[in-house]
Length: 424
Image: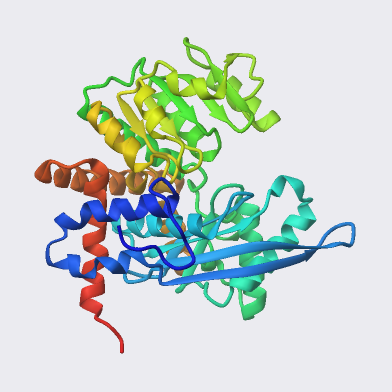
């Protein structure tokens, strides 16, 4: 593995360490482009900012914020902003790098970027949240822009936060710049279909993978970790296809029902209570027992590093669909492969969100907006085409879908790097 950068000390199962191992595994398939591979192991730009705000009680609080641009060879940076107490520079670096791979895998004209603030947003009032968002946007405003780096929602951020970011950037530049962020409210230039796009991508790639496995979705049993926009949207689409959601887990608890949840009931419960915990249509169980649930399809759609080696040995699913970014550590990847469990990796499986973000960006520039049906048709076509190319690569080299995805994406990134050359 490449020596770590001076400000990051990764372990093999840490986010940046995981990413570096994934890159190392793809080097044998890059041909002459391998000479450029160190480009992928170093972020182009990493910004750490202080975010001071006045709290409602008059105190001044300081929060640490980040924006990392991993690679810009194929276009402006693109990637979300997350608010979470565990956000670190190393995590944001890895998430930005995975965005580079993801955008190239579906052939979007973007590089990879990511941002975050180390904060528990649930401890802030709405006004404090707005002040923090606006100050963070002003601090990172020196590197973002519609043609430079375009943030989007991620963990604990939403269309309202994107609206504040867009407004702040616009006020600072003196003109309305709807294209500076995606995932905005529709009234401010957001795209129809964006909220459920990531979950839809998980479903579309999962449906194609199930066909490869001769796994009938009618009656298939699903376990979903993370029941936010991604996990719940994917669960709804699988349920509409005849599958049963038999287990779910989020920050409020873990629940199971072997007969399957009533999706209308659980969605209403999550909207009212903020999580799956306490849902009366299922039984509670210990959080760690989630990984022992008897299921056909597992969707980890929470945070990175959830599928460890120990958990990989216990998973009963035939198919793992990575709705989250980086949920499976490399050692667990190898165990699942040895056990014959097919993993559709994050960098293609959850690319539906950034694909529709691209549609939103294009619509903002043209001021011409598509219907939701048009959005979904375009999304499905791109996702299916990208997965087919990746699967063909996997079959040709007899490698995993993850390594094949990295092979396709890294080739595109490094070819752009080679053709652009070095300046000066």
